[in-house]
Length: 506
Image (cartoon, rainbow, N blue to C red; front, side, top):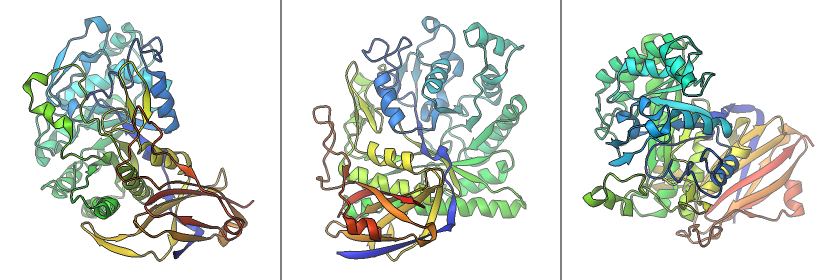
């Protein structure tokens, strides 16, 4: 048994955790929308067709924002296709995912669903096939109260008050050759700058997100980010970044160290942004929107057959990227969430991609039930208790060598919530054999006690939650000994994801 000591001080903090760090993403892709959040006729659906069983699980996740309508989908999407009477909407081919889009769910339905679930929309505009003028018409339709052709059209469609969308993304992954009408960085800057001007002329109160790199593996990273920021620094509020994390070496220890890859990605983007700030003599510090992230085991997934089987192309909402997450995935996921918290001074928004069915924490059956995948649990724990101020701490933790470089065997983060007077400590123990005894030094916080210790541990690495056995992998409450309560000590089981909640000043 190895003993670790963590020292926390009230004034030694990183920054406040923005609630937008716990956002997600819904794209017109696979079954994310149709039979995901929206399924008219389902036994749980309301009169508008929104699945309330799914909404209940989303509420448990405490989702703050949702990015919509894409994703790669947005670069070939015309927002007008999804407005007005549903029986008059066109059916289109989607170039991004080679499916057929019925447009029965559009901007009105998304806004209505978001309001119903107390979610802040993050809207992406089409900078692939779309134009700056069309983006201007889009925000006019959505945000202008009345008195113009497009605002009056919205009212004719039954929405009298504006949607009032305040978060707008200037395209999606325009650095990617896979993107419809991909642009190089210089051309993207020209198009995004003119779009930003029009959007702000229509609504001065909006926040804008520029496209940063879609992966640290892109050959244009981080040069793309430098060029984009030099051209857009004063026009935007956030630079986006995207990254999916894979078990590339089939070595669990390498996979568990994915948080090192995330840390390095964020460090490089922040350094690039700060270089541009200095070069431009700007007084503004650029913040980061990590608005696509998740675990995605690309190789060997059955969905890949979809793109090579021509008989399966251009169907309506076929199952795509419906990854079944394992206990190992949940552990890796928890480590990534710690990284987001530990960078909350610069990463102000994040979007788990995606929310339902498509590489998602929630999985549904058309006409059937909805279940929680393994990654549901670390997200739910952190989004519920990771509200407040992220704390720095002092601790000596053993390290190991991995494909990502030197990695801590215990990856952790801590958040102090002044309102509840609680500290939430989140920790991933990557060691396959050793448990770690952890002692908390909290003298700076006054009298403290441990309220609970919850963990994911003890399962086979490939264990999944299924429709037949939806509770295969669920958190367990660990007992607290009297000694642990007095000395503020817990034990982190080998290969485990942990949340320890401590009460302070009580």
